[in-house]
Image 1 (tube, rainbow, N blue to C red):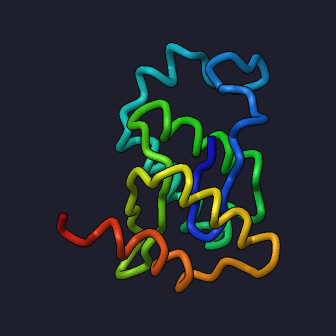
Image 2 (image 1 turned 30 degrees about the vertical axis):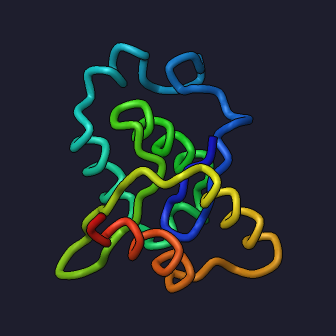
Length: 126
């Protein structure tokens, strides 16, 4: 399973689901009880402290990715800086995330590349 966090595609396939990870600081019951908006607020707070959070703390970024997926089955989140920090999120086809992950092997993924490939397409009416 892949998850897009800003400009980083995170491979969750090799990770342990935090609900079954004894090293994770929250129990499965706590994760289930935590509202989706609370998880987003906690993630937003991380980005207030560090705008490159997903690059500097991959282990924590993976945990947030798992929790967001568990709570809302989303696999993409983007932080928007406009008079504060806000999260945009959605569900992106796994194939598209795979293409982005392959691209990241040959070139850095920029915000513009991600916006063109993901967010602008998600915003278009069907």
